[in-house]
Length: 372
Ligand code: FES
Ligand SMILES: [Fe+2]
Image (cartoon, rainbow, N blue to C red; front, side, top):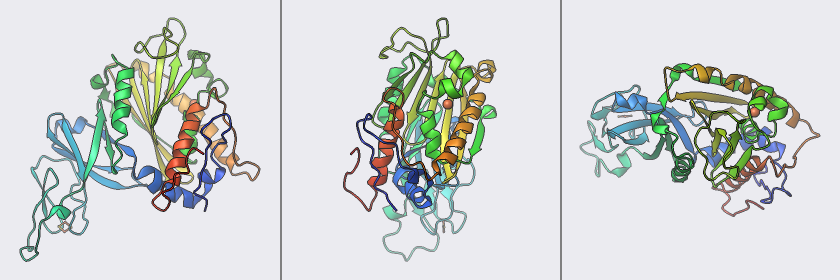
C-alpha cells in the first residue's frame, strides 16, 4: 500500500491525488487515524445545554464512534470528556441529565462533572486509587454561535479558524442563530467522502452543473482564499441582491457577497447566507459510502421562507449526481491523476495538500514528505 502521497506546492505543476486514495480500502482505514482521529468534529448544538447539565454525544457515528459527554460547568462554560467508564469501559451516560455526580450503571464507579473519579465500591484494598488514570479523559471544545466542536487530539487549529471567520464577518450575528432541527436533512451517497469535498471546493463546475445557482451568482467575481486549515469561497450576487455583511478584506470590495462558503479541515462546510447558516458535515461510512448531514440555523426561526427558496436541496441533488459519476470514472484503469486550474481549483489543491501531509505523517512515518 502506498501512503506516500505527494502534491506539488505550486498548483501549476501539481497533479491531483491518485485514484488509489479514493479507492483503496486499506488507505481508507488509515485515513481514520491519520486524518480524522486528530481532527475537530462537529458535536451538535448547544441548545440542550440550556435545560441540562450534560448531554451524551457520539462523534462520527459509524466511523470513529467516539462517545463523549458535553458538560455545562456554568452558563457559557462548556467542556467535553470521554463517556467511557475507566473501570471496564461501560458507557456512562445514555441520556441528557442534571445530576452533579455520574454513577456508572455497571459496577457503581462515581465521577464528578469535571471527570474526576471520586469513588468505587469494593476498591478499598486497591492501592493508589483513585488516581488521575481513573479520571475521564478531557477533550478540547470550541463553539461558533450554537454550533459545538470537539477535538480528540492535541491540535488547536480550530480556535484561529473561528477567530478568522468572526473577524472576516464582523456584523454577522453567529450568536443570534437558532438551530432548526426540523429543517435538518441527511443525504447518503455511494461515493468516497473526499470526492464530495473536492466538488464542494470549487465553483468551476457551477455554470456546467448548477443552472439555477449560476443564474444567481456573478461567476466572474467568484473568489477563493486558502489559509492553514480552512479556506473560503466568496459568492457574489448581482446588483441589487441582498448583501450579507460588508467584506472589507475582499479583493472585490464593494461587490455584493451573497454567500460565504467556509470549509474547515477535513469535513466541515459552513455556508453563510443572509437568512442564516447551512452547516454540512461530510461523514465517511466506507470507502464508497458517505453520509452528508445538513443542519440549518436561522436568524429568524419564524421566517423559513428564504431558506426554503434558497435552492440548497436542488444544488445538493446536482452535486450528488456529478460526484457519483466521478466515483465511477476514477475506477477506470484509464484514469489516475489530473491537473488543477490555478484560477478555479486553489481550494481543491489546498485540500489535497493537507490530505497528503496528514497521510504521510502517520505514527509510522515521521519524516516530512509533504508539499513536495
Ligand atoms: S465499567 Fe463502570 S464501574 Fe465497572
Ligand atoms: Fe456544486
